[in-house]
Every structure is written in structure tokens, then in C-alpha cells.
Length: 120
Image (cartoon, rainbow, N blue to C red):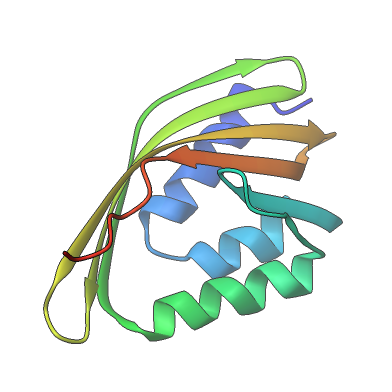
């Protein structure tokens, strides 16, 4: 079960822009992440590689936790992300992350957000 201090530390690392580092330090080896209803990605190394791939395509990433709740081994975080791609286009993601922790590390996370609409 994470302490409030441990969660706040995790949030500070993400807000600092060290997304891949946060996964390396705060997720279990067998952790999974799931975007809305897509199949989950599994394994910390897979999660780190995926995150680095996204970040490599971005010129700038802004991350802000609006609010967070800890209830036993379960955590909810409301995030705002603004990702500026190489063309200068800003992609804003307003999401809720639901996490399950094993001790002081995240082992399951699911993100809920409105998917981007295809250009018409």
C-alpha cells in the first residue's frame, strides 16, 4: 500500500517530465498499463520502451496532476498532459489513471480518456 508521501513523490517525478524514469522506479517488473479498452502492455521494460518511443516524438511534454486519491492499494490520479509534437501541434489529454499498487510499487494501471477524433 503506498503512503501519501510515496504517491506525492511519484507525481513529482512525472510532473518533472521524467516519465520513463518514473516507470523504472515506481512500477513492478511485471506491471501492466492499459489505455481505455485496448489490451494492456505488460512488463516494466515494455512500458519504459513504449514511453520513450512516445517522448522521442515530442518536442515538449507538460504533465500536471490535478488531484489524487489513495485508498489502500488503489490510487486514482486526474492528469492533464499537453504534448507538443515535432510540428508544433499540441495534443491535450485529460485523463484519469486508476492504479493498483503492490507495496510501494504500481503493478496495474488503466487510463481513461476521450480518444482523439480522426480528422474529417
